[in-house]
Image (cartoon, rainbow over all chains, first blue to last red):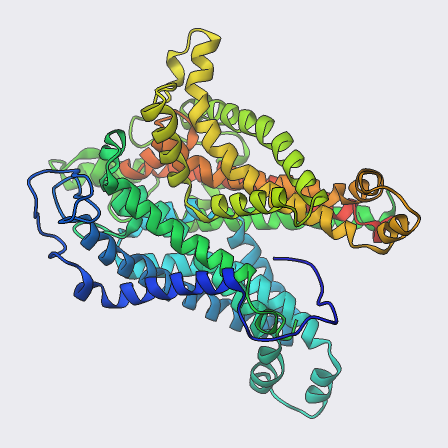
Length: 281
Length: 317
């Protein structure tokens, strides 16, 4: 994120700049694909449609075929559903838990804050890939387990972020006044703190989404993520790794799909309109 | 060093120890959750129930989890890591050589990544918003946005498939000459270097730019100091703390990256050992490897924090 300050002459608006708009379009396109995948896929997803495996790109198979001769385009489109869907649910869970607990810790303070913070610090000291590896290997890989694991792994980061922001707001006069008025925890969190940290929290949501997409792809690549016959983009790369030495499009396109999604989100965060990014900050 | 710094640092160290305890308990719990009865797995399907019960007793599997945890922790503290379930070898012996291999990989990566990242980070901060800076920023965003396996497959595609310079696998035991050694380490090190330096470049650049925005640098500029002098003489010494902090934090990326990289290149390091242990359900081995990873991570993060504390000018009175 850039550190420069708003120069007085610059107009503050909700308008996106060019890069921001472009990345937003790519993200929305992938979201749409994830939603409509079965309608868009030209061939049945699991069906072997070609006798030639690792086929090159052609008019019939836009992204070639995979190691069994299945249409790659259909599989990448369906993969969007797993990658985007699982990551989105996981990041929503992680941010909800993290932000809610973080605000609570900041407002309540005292031993609740200490205990929560210690616990989160400990969780954050476990490398994410290692945590995922152990838990997913232990419980077996199903989509609910994946979502919960990813959410738990990224809750502490979100907690720390939200707590740090909320502690600052908590010291503001209007919060002190509200507290003196006798407002309860629910009111303070909902009406005083949350509206003032939404901008940074949204940016953090995007960043964490990228982390989760990367971790999910990594786990799938190790064979611990989405299980066959279904496949997210990471699993698609793993399946077709044998085609790497042939330069098959079957390895390249799922990789490209991951890269376009994650790079777009990162660029969007860096190019958010000032008005959104600075909300309350 | 004044008292306040010493106090803060010792507080940080104490909290690292507490964190380590919680982490070790978490790891222990997580591995306890692995389904399947170890004794049953070890003896196979044909084992009689009595034999399974006997083995469970011999391995202390029938005791409450908390006792098993304390026993394990005591063993760790005294250097006894236990024996592997899979082949009954002492874990210390299994891990020893593997850990050395992984450390070599990490050391080689650090030796290349740190100078590279510092140079690129500082130069792009000096030439902020120039074409050079924009290219570097774009590249680093791209690299931190993609998974490690993508970097690795890309490296294989370019160096092993198209250029045919390097082997796609890294069997570190087959090295005889120095050239062999280089060839074996090249791909894993290239992949890791990319990932680590991208983080480091971004953080270094941000740290230098932040100090460039401070009043004293502005003052230097008003007095007519050249751009180069401004950066090297006024900004850099003050950005040193945040930069070293950034280096330590970025190096912790190695711990995650190494899991993917060692698996892809079949590099005989500790991460590969752990991935294999996960598939054979070798609990003591998984626990030990996981602890090593967490300790490494915690050490790096703690060092980063302590550097941040010590280099904070507000505490230097």
